[in-house]
Image (cartoon, rainbow, N blue to C red; front, side, top):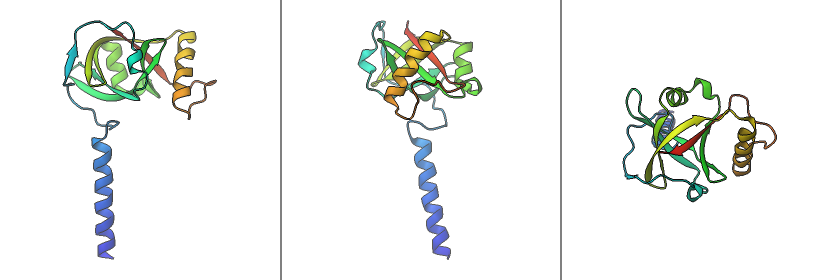
Length: 151
C-alpha cells in the first residue's frame, strides 16, 4: 500500500510540474527575452498559424503570460474568457503599451479592447474556425478580445 501512495505522489508531482512549466502555465513569467523587432508591423498574417504567443504587461513590473494568437484580416488579436476578472486584462486597460512575443521575436504593441460588435463577431468567427470547440454563432459571455497594434 505504501508503494501505491508513493507512486501516486510521484505521478501527481510530475503532472503538477508539467503544468507549471508548460507554455499555458497559470503562473506568469517575468520579462520576455529575445530579439526585439524595431520596425512596425502592418500585416500580422505571418502569425496566422501560431496557436499561442506571450504577452508582457509592465505594470507594476514585467509579467508575461501565454495567450491565444488570432489573426483576422491581417490584424493581431488576443482573447480570454472571464476576462473582466483576469489580472492581465486589467493591466492592459491600465497600461496598453505592452510587448508580444510570437515566432521567437518580440514586438512592441498597443492593446485596445475591442468593443465594436461587428469586429467582435468577425474575430470570434476566426477563433471558432480555429478552435472547433467554439460555436461560431454564439460568443461566450465574458469573452474579450484585444487588438494588438504595432508601435
